[in-house]
Length: 309
Image (cartoon, rainbow, N blue to C red; front, side):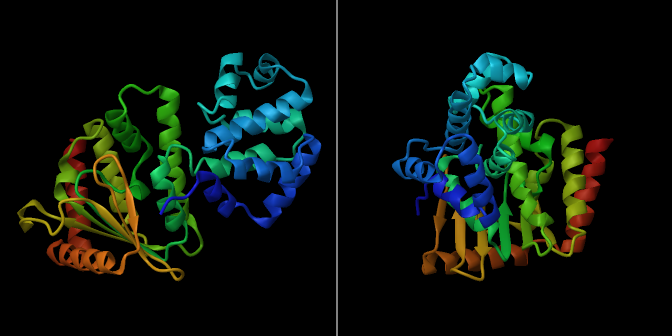
């Protein structure tokens, strides 16, 4: 399954947002029809490129230079050039400035909020983010790092810095923001059931610092107090685990459930019935070998205290 990120964006846009965007397009001199054609032709193939193209079009229509827009937003010209070039997603302050300067009635703020859920994810991960948004239940197994849905900001930052040591602070910030934005699904009125099995190795692995680990483990234990979250630990003495790779099972009302795994450097989303049956059976074996949720939380809090001491 391969999905264009702009198709992902289209799936997120509500009717009232489309109406507001239509109004914004009129004010910036851009027809909604032209915008759709641009998306279909693939002139902007990524979320940041799409946002940057919208900023550039509005700025040019307003007869402003990059320096003038940057001054209005309290940024320099280079920042505006990076945004328009698709190398950086403009900050919320920048989006608010665009709406104020271009009189676009909140278009750029809404657009940025939506794109923040996509920016920072590699192209092959976008299909999974769509599935996750409509999940009825999410069952994940982690053997190195905790699932993104329960990571703290500092833990996520440490994970990204380890994986991408040469990227800028601004890029790391975008990656973290994108990961944390996915956690919004657990803040819904009716969130999915989140079932987490984590290998004990992940509890002891120092990601970032001992302080960060204490914070992350405490957060994980606190999350387990929710009626929508179950956490189990697969201890080191449980023997060889049923799976040597992390994976996620996502169940939805419609359409069929899916399984996501991430071999080195590339993610794979499958709806093949045979793979789904195998993944479900593997998850059942992992769950049977893990500690009960109550004992798991006790262990997590004990290790958190050890990191704090």
